[in-house]
Image (cartoon, rainbow, N blue to C red; front, side, top):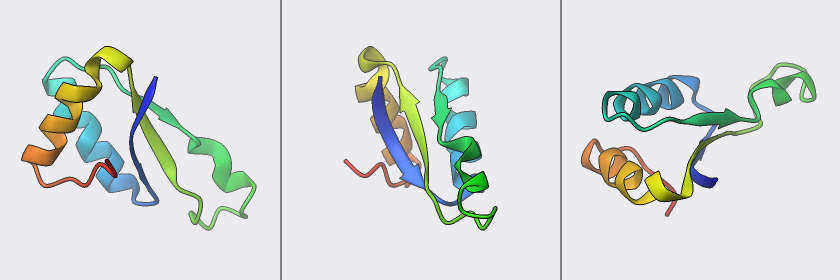
Length: 71
């Protein structure tokens, strides 16, 4: 698993997942329930992960849609 992006914006994660799902790339969202630890303020970032073999194409898809990948 490789980290594709890290953000506190849940709409950005949902948009990225929709784009990648359209390309047939499975995604995994980590740290979804970490907000319990910060009092549900949403200040802890969520991570969007993909399989190692899908990382290159997933990065390309997000960059083509002007979504920062942190890479």
